[in-house]
Amino acid sequence: MLIGALAFVPMLVPRYPRFVLSLALVNAIAAMGVNLSMGYAGLVSVGHAGFAGVGAYATALLLQHGGLSYWLALVVGALFTAVVGFLIGIPALRLEGLYLAIATFSLALAVPQILKRLDGWTGGSQGIVLAKPRAPFGLPLTSDQWLYFLTLGVLVLLFVLCWNLLRGRTGRAIVAIRDNPIAAGAMGINGALYKSLTFGISAGYTGVAGALGGLVVAFVAPDTFNVFLSITFLVGIVVGGLGGLSGLVFGAIFVAFLPLWAQGQDLGSLLPNRIIEETQKPGGPAIVYGVVLILLMFVLPNGVGGLFRRIGQLISSRRYSRSE
Image (cartoon, rainbow, N blue to C red):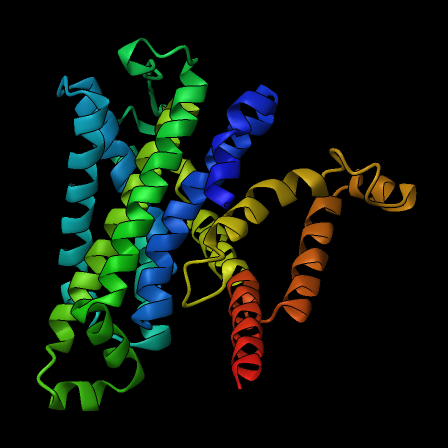
């Protein structure tokens, strides 16, 4: 139902809200990757913005210097990021908990600086300007509308792939390692291999998000992929529901639109004038953002996905009681 509603957005909303919603879909893809690592495998990471940067620049360089189509550049960029994530995961995943978080934090700090140093390829701090792809097959769509549908299509495809992965043998092994690594090892599950594989797939998802984000904005720059972007991904999966897939789109929309609303945009019918005046003061948007986030955590401690699961349980229990 949600996907069907999103499919009509380009025809119904103005250009700027559609642009922000495209970025929300990009965030949903990244949140899916981070959630795969943190929610299902229990691997705490605050460095996935670095993988988004790797995917964005790999795709941009393939477009600029490799002469590839954006379709192929997206696929190759995602695979390259997944390999990078897998290789980084081999030594990094010897650590656990906060130690792993610190290791990935260093990755988020290092990647933007490395991209700046490679200025002969990456353009340094100036970044790379990209041309937005046109709609194929003569479709009567603008570049922005086509990119929206492309991002939505990639999101649906990756959602289905992730859903099937987690419902299969690999997904059960990943969750078993998270819940009880000793018992999983006793059952013959190679914990190091599965952790590195999960980290690589998670990085690949985030790389796709970075590449699509670069196409939507038509620009990539090192400072975009900073630690704050990693925190944004974390906020999205917490709001959407850690360890679930159903609420990630809502979490991504939250982190995309709430900062705009916190700045007093389109809030006239939602907040008293006094609060809107406060948002115009220095630090006001950050205060509103923080207060709304805290209230949301009180109301929905398990995120939107937890709310969906609770509703599903209530419906199932009522059906069971009626059948008796």
